[in-house]
Length: 91
Image (cartoon, rainbow, N blue to C red; front, side, top):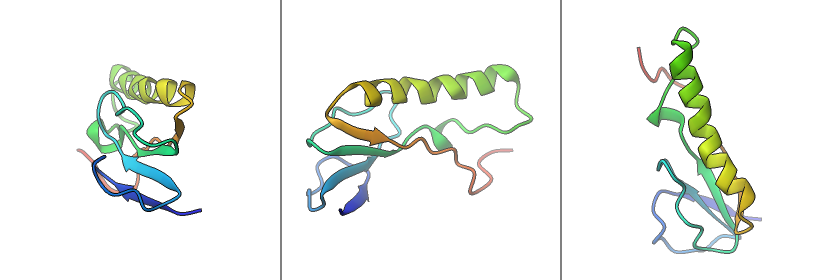
């Protein structure tokens, strides 16, 4: 199986699974029968362990708001929530 990461839906579909980094608040509608949302939330709403509980809760809810539609709609192959742990995202 082949996949490729893209950030706009108008790109050419050459792989077995159409994969896209979609950081929108609501996921884009799947435009291919095999569509995988490869990154969401992450750096758009970063958190640290020292953050207030309200910020941590909102971060969790943002992940849930994407996981729910991606998991419930059969045109999605799935979704991968990115936690942005690989670099220092904010102070």
